[in-house]
Length: 107
Image (cartoon, rainbow, N blue to C red):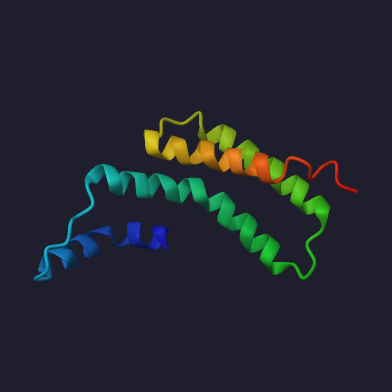
């Protein structure tokens, strides 16, 4: 949804101006954050789609995908993102680490 709204940003801005109700517009910085988040969240969406497509996802897939997402997050943190985007990447990393810390030890 975020990706789509970024794609039609100009139409959204124009439409909000036409309303009689005074809607608060997103700032250029907020639009930039939305755009950055699209690239940050894309690998998570791909993993979700892949796991959802499987009838029975195996534990070995979870381990590989977790490591892959952690690697992607580490690479993303090297890029010059906005501080809000960096915080979200750090929280995604923390969430993956916290939720799946024992997955490789599970029998």
